[in-house]
Amino acid sequence: MKNFKLFTRNTRYLLVAALIFLSSCKKLVEKPSSVIVPDNFYTTATQVQSAYTASLNALWGHNVGYQAYMDDFNQDDQIVRGDLNIPEDYGAELWAAHYNALLNINTAIKALKKGLPGADKSQTDVLIGEGKFLRAYNYFMLVRIFGGVPLIIETTPDPVTNKLARASVQQVYDQIVSDFTDAIAKLPVTRSADMRGLPTRDAAKGLLAKAYLTMATYPLNMPANYAKAAEMAKEVIDSAHYSLVPDIKDLFSVATQYGPEMMWSLNSNYQNLGPDPRIWSDMRGFGDICAEPTWEQAYPKQPRKDAFIETTLDGVLYYNLGDYWPGVKKFQYDSPADFAAGRSIVNMPVIRFADVLLIFAEAENMSKGGPTQQAVDAINKVINRANGYVVNNEDPLATTSLSMAAFDNKVIQERNYELCFEIDRWFDLIRKHILKQESLPDVQINFSSDDYLWPIPTNDIKVDPSLTQNPGY
Image (cartoon, rainbow, N blue to C red; front, side):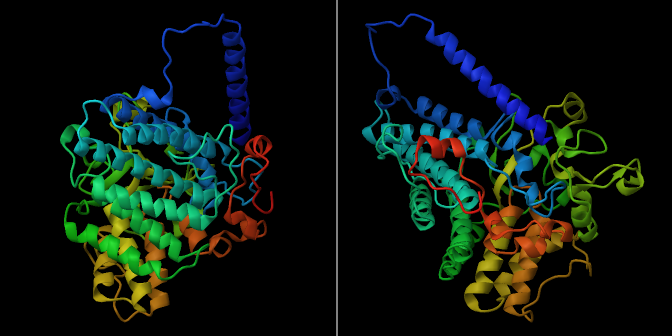
C-alpha cells in the first residue's frame, strides 16, 4: 500500500512538472487588458462561497486530502497495519492540503473585509464567520498533527516572499479560539435545506469545546480549559438543536448525514464523491482501511458494534475465513448499487452530537473533581443507545460513585468505541498521552516520545530554512 502510494505521489509530481514545462513554452501576453489578482477577484458572495468549497475540496476530494491519506492514521490502536515506525515526510500531503485550503480561505476573508459590491453587512458577516470557522478547523488539525506551525492569516505578508517560522502551539491555539469565537458570533443558528452542509453556530461551539478540551491536556496541559470546554459543550446541549439518532443502525445512513446528530462533516454527493466504500470492507471489498483484530475483539458486544464493525461474511466470522480483517461498517451504508459501482455519498463526520456529549462529560468531571450527575447523564445517553437501551455488563452505565480518574477512563474508552475511524482516536491518544500504553505489545517496542508529532515536510524546510524539524526526524 505504502509503496503504491509513493509511486502515485511521484507520478503526480512528474505530471505537474510536465504541465509546468509545457505551459512555459507558450507565448506570454505582454500587455494584458486587465489583471485579476486575489485582492480584486472576489466581487460576489457566490465567488467567496466557491473559495470555501475549494478549500474543503483540498481536504476531501477525489483521491486527495483525507480521502487519499486516511490510512496515515493507522498508527492508532484501531486501524490495522500501524507500527509506530513514522518515516520522514509522513503526512506531508495533509500538510499541503491544509495550507492549500488556508490560501483560499485567507484571500476570501481579506476580500470580505474590504467589502463586496452589493453585499450587505449581515451577509458579509456570515461569510466572514464561515471563513473563520474553516480557518480554525484547518489550524486545529495542523497543530494536533505537527505541533506549532506557520501561522498565516489574511493580514500576513506574502508567505512566498516572506519566510515564516513556526508559531508556538499556544499561539496557534490562540488563533483557533479567536476564529471559532468570531464564527460563533457571526454564523446562523440553523441552515436552510439547500445550505444544510454549511457550518452553524453550534458546530463552531462544538469544535471550540473540543479545542478547549485539547488545550487542557497534552501538550499545553492547561487544566483551566476544562471548565471552558464544559461550558461551551453545555451550550450546545442546552440549545436542543441537535440530538442523538435513536437507532444506532440509522446513524450513518444517507438520510441522517445532515442531522439530527451530524453537526458538521466533510460532505460527499454525486458531484463530489466520497472514497470508494469498498476500501472499508475487507471481506466484500478492497480492505484498504480495516480494524485491528485485537481492538475489534475487545470491543463490547452490543448493537453499536454490529452497526459500526463488519465481522462476518455470510455468517462466518472473519478469523475463520483466512487472511481477512474486520471491516469498517459505519461508512458502508451506501445503496447496494453505489457500493457495487464504487461510489459513495456518505459524509465523514467532523463534529457530531455524541462527541459533544462526551466532551462535556470529560470536561465536567475533570473541572469539578469528579463526575456530576450532568456528566453521568451525558455519557449515559451515548452508552444507552450503544446498548440498544438495555442493561449490558460489557458496557455498563456510568454512576456518580466513580472516582474522577475512573470516570475519565470510562469517557476515553467510550470515545474509543463511539468515534472509531472518524479521525479522532489518534488525537485522544496524543492529548491524553497514552500512545504507548494503548499500542499493541509488538508495536510498543517501536515507540518513541517523538511519535507524538509527525515530521514537518522536508521540502518545506528546504524552501524555508526558518522552519525547524520536530525531534526524531
